[in-house]
Amino acid sequence: MTDLPRHNATSAMAPPPEEPARDTPPPTRREQAKGWMQLVRLPMLLTAPGDSLAGAALACLTFQLVHTCGGVGLSLLWPLATISVLFYAGGLIHNDVVDVKRDAAERSDRPIPSGRVKKDHAVIAMFICMAGAMFLAWHLLPFLAFRVAGGLLLCIILYNALKERSALLGATLMGLCRAGNLILGIVALSAQHDELKACILLDPTDAAAQVSPIMPFQIPLVQGIVLFYFLYVAAVSLVARHETSEAFTANKTLSQRLFCLLPLGPVLGLTALFAIPLCDGGDTIVSEGVPQFAWIPLGLLVAATLWATILFLRAKSPKQLIPGVTLLLRNLLLIQTSIIFLGGFGDAFLYCFAGAYVLHWILCRKFYAS
Image 1 (tube, rainbow, N blue to C red):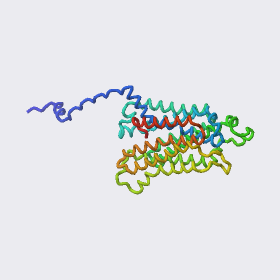
Image 2 (cartoon, rainbow, N blue to C red):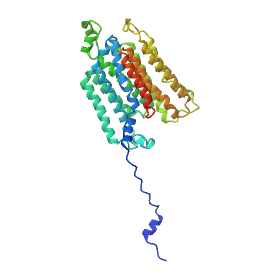
Image 3 (cartoon, rainbow, N blue to C red):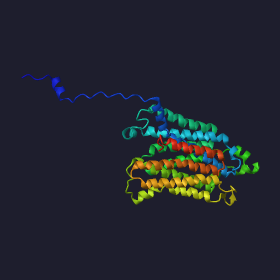
Image 4 (cartoon, rainbow, N blue to C red):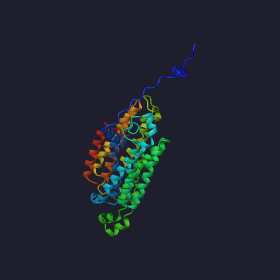
């Protein structure tokens, strides 16, 4: 009996050759465009400009410019809005770049793992957005505001790098990012000494002594709004982290039910601030009080937050949290609208934010917001 040739014996014991992998067709231009829109969370880009514009409105309120602030700082409003959008888009792209390995293992349908957006292209876009925001801040904003922009950029980078280490740390950094954008608007407008001196409703010689970049932060109303805005964003971030976990089930513990109420506290606190007379040490800042239109978005804000809380309490799986989280994110537009009306920016902003609210609702039907 002759032995079989060695290569025949080896081939008989070896596993059958694997079938060649089928080449997946490259994404179409439409798929690539949709991938970029998902990468920057297109619905949430609508909420970015309102942070800094709301801050500018608070500065106007502080310097008694309610009747004239529509003409004050207009040269700053478009740079502020643009810088906010660039920071937000750059931060979101950086978030996906940092999480690319995790997304490839757990969420392969995300833009970069799915191949609709190349990682190298995403990195380039991230640098363009962040560098563009800092470039505009350097050339178009006061130097103090440029320093605030640098701090905001640091918060964005730290959030993307450290958010997975601790839920509380991630929520805190996200709150600092949003509140930092609000502070950027306050500082950018209040540091414009020359323009404020020309437009303030006081004697120019007296205005020089009163105008100060830190003056808005000495007023309890401004401090409260910034604080509650920070707390609201942090609370929403904590709730949103459970969209992909199994923490929420049909049978919730008492701590989980209390957790669902987190975003409601800052909203009620913010609403209470608007009911307090607007004064600083007994000197009325706005003699007419809060404009009536400001209560419309505030009422919608409370109602939407209550409904989102009910959705959280009813949720039987993590996926059922998504509609409530999306609603809470959309509430940012209502908070920004209320603050802008408080500063007296006028009806034009009402139409813009109302349109942004509707557009956000439409876009969320096709793109995820969180």
